[in-house]
Length: 328
Image 1: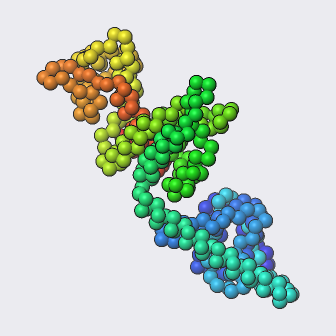
Image 2: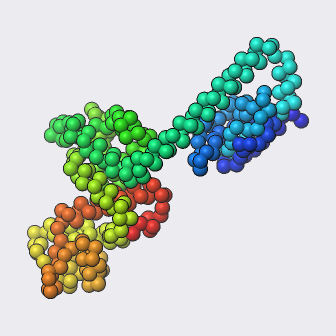
Image 3: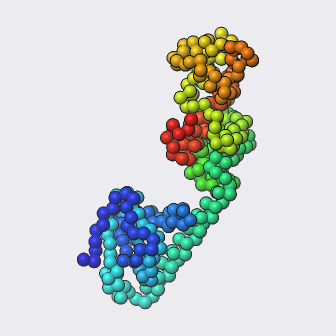
């Protein structure tokens, strides 16, 4: 039998780079990614879907496969053997065979250049620093763009994002997907607020460029310190309660440990012990009056710290796909 039906599950290999050529494959259903592995990097060359033909680059030379093919989804593939192809090629006019060979050769050259380009991009990104350095650069650049392009419309300050990501690609030399991921993390951490505007499209509302710049510095310093000294996630509600407590009309300048525990219990229905106060002091969430049972905190600084640490966590989660518990 010269035609064979092959069924693949997602992530199953159709063939690997270096395998001998045994004909071509026609995607009947599903999708198959063509890629190469170079210097530890998987470089995607194409995604083939129903009706596409795979494996044409080696049918004339009979050389080993120059790339790997792996199913993206569950797929059905028709395999056409070399014997069948040879029988048809014998009947082709010489000039048609020459055109096909030339086209195949051009595709191979294009693939080689694509792989080289991807590797150069990776090396450049390594020189530019980690994703956290890139996120800090992006925050600085967004702050600059807001200062230049801020619009006030009907009493509301906003910065339209149309064209901004594309501009970032050419200036910061990374893909648009990276910057979109940064925006998602910034929104997740409440660093910025993005909404759709009927007139201006997707925009940053009430942007604060100085806060973005401060965050960029905070991110760089936090990364240099290995993200140590963050308040544990489980205490974020506690910090929010401290902010609200300090903004109440009856707020005091200093509180005792007992007062803090009692008021937090009423404010946020949280039960905390006096030992937690010492931990918050060590994390510089609050400060203690020398030699006295008296503690205070700055609500604005605490609110900013909550936002900055939450945004850092969102960036780190996006970078490592780690479970939340992996970031204290």
